[in-house]
Length: 347
Image 1 (tube, rainbow, N blue to C red):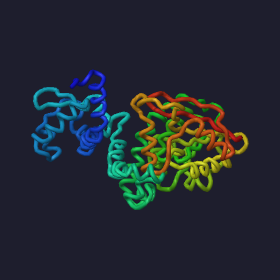
Image 2: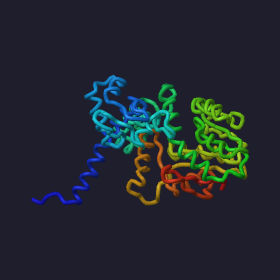
Image 3: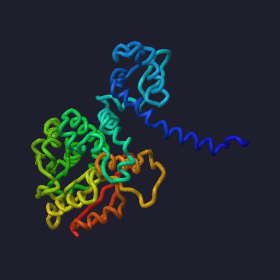
Image 4: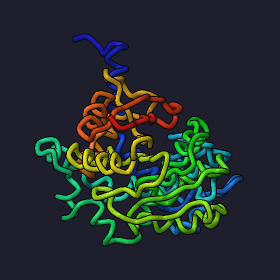
């Protein structure tokens, strides 16, 4: 009987990492839930002090901290002492570029439990979320304000890097007004307005979705340059802008609903307006785990949570054509963002 060769040993290691991925997620999720990153802070923290802060016996918390050190979230600074790694520091609430809310939302039951019904979604094409929680995700969030606020904050965390990249990379010099469709808490539009002092903006979202934007605009000193309009993008989008943005929204929906949104956008564009779709753009050929931002896992997440999907350029071409639009150009955002900008005009 032959032993395990080097190639098979490597394959076994890869499989084990895949199988235990959910356990790793639970460890990092608990770090966020316990606010451990904030408790550790800038310096070196004592395990006993952290145990008291978390109300967990020190020997048991030490076991969690050992796992976090092994995952590169913390650093062992000495016997019974830990500090944060650069990665772990992203779970601090006050960290520039914090991913705390993003981590809390994406490890909540609303996000994780539907994955246990992945097979249901694949067989039916329907979101497993509805089966697990008894209503669609957005209806569920509407009935649970605390979770809705967490969702909005998580989307803001996720959008921050993309917002900075879009503001820096896209040429807004020919624009007078920009409307952000599904603009949420205003993360994207504020980044654009800060970089373009002569520009006016509009956030268009549901009343609940746009509510956090009021405080953000005030805090950024942009309330006089950006209005908030509420409504339903399946019905209509407000007119008057030179450029319309729709980021991380089309992928939430199946083809039928995506085309309805795009048709509303087409009506709002007028003859000379442009639409900038910012979304994941799947390559024509599958790449294994590109840059660690696996879009194929995100594609399945859109399915189990919302019934949506990530798409290729050909998919977007087809949707736009059905809505009377065409893609005039595509520009990739930096790899750490993992999205592209599709410039769309009337066909």
